[in-house]
View 1 (tube, one colour):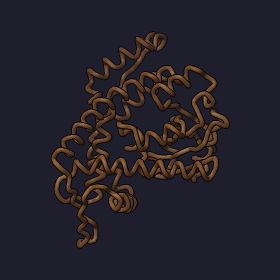
View 2 (view 1 turned 60 degrees about the vertical axis):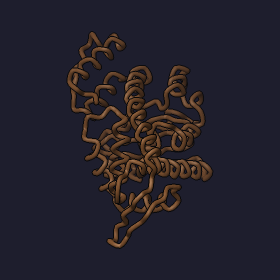
View 3 (view 1 turned 90 degrees about the horizontal axis):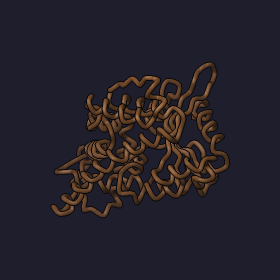
View 4 (view 1 turned 90 degrees about the vertical axis):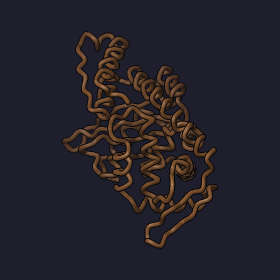
Length: 299
């Protein structure tokens, strides 16, 4: 780990005391290895929400609609390091990685993930098991969408594209998915092979060309049900994304700025909010979302 990343992790842990069981690292900074020019994505896995916060309101919102998301800045060697970290109980992380209908967790943590800190070996085993379940869930839910021969890149591109479409994103989901796979194709190829070996689907493998090609035998009925499930996830995800953004307004300082940054990051739409609206956050949120809607910031 880079020293800067450890500093960010330690600062986040200090804010939540002895409740932290593990800290995970994922996203673009993990792929580039540079936490100095970007925004590091961290997940703090805690014992329970009551012990993680000194606020009943924060604990209530985190339990109602997990996770709570926070912004963190830490001075380090003359620079400012930045992170966005989410708080989730270890139990919710385990349940979400395997059992949640929506792909919010298993779509995210099927991707490459680092463990910065763990309380003990048992916690590490629990996290590893959850990450394995996330990869299996992701691939199992993506397989019925594949038609004809496909390789690991096709499978991950399709699955990640479907998962991205369940969020408020205005970028091309297919291109973003392909770009992510191409950052570490050997890793995703190896992971695919391991998961497919234990799959309950009837899968044919052709590795004559060096890179394995697959064919999955899925009934028309299963494909139809899977397609319906992904359409429901897309609708559900849009609603949950808006609710989480609104929750961010009340759960940490600078909530309006976080909402604006999040939307601009994924859509390119920029909205200016004056001092009058900032004094009345609920009204500001209504105005922000109306202006963003007019700019086609949501899909």
